[in-house]
Image (cartoon, rainbow, N blue to C red; front, top):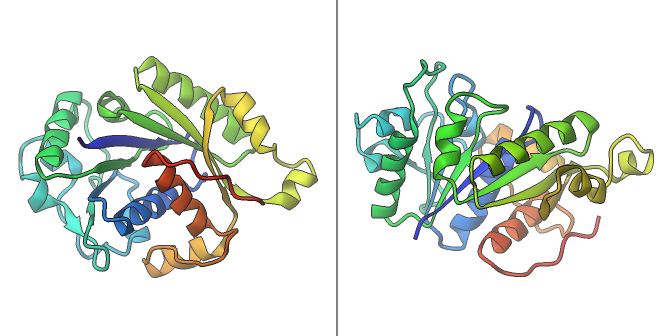
Length: 249
């Protein structure tokens, strides 16, 4: 059974795309077949973070519209054979160009191709196509950085996803900086949980290796205990149903 997960945030700059790439890579390294979808039409960059800009041609909209089969459109990652990318259109979609029915057809092809996961790097905010993605999602991950604006957006997005009927919505607090928490510049993890009313899926520390890896177009890799790579692996394990302690920051 394919598990479809939409990764969302109320505003840009939360590290949502890096999280999608990192968790997708972690699941693929565990032998799971993963389809990563860039859902941000006109502002796509998941292909850049994954180092696959020269491999993508067709978009999720092409597959949803029946123009091309999924497995011809999806590009395989150069070093992780179980990880595939379906990019977003280069230009914003016209109204009604992407529907829940189209996304359902795409997901059906993913199930036929034996994908274990569809990870959707959702558009920031509430673009029109967001509803079509949410209609197919069995789970959602809300990403926040802990600042007041980010928390407000996360709380709003959580309510939207719940209203859309997504069965399970959980929170990731990303890019945590202990120094800023101690100075009161951003809230704690508990503050984020209280503000959104969501259960915590994971915490990710601020890690410059994320930017380095994204710039080089490779998966984040680190053996450090308190690294983003370790946090991504832990989140992947929790998505698999395993109990993993939170990182100590």
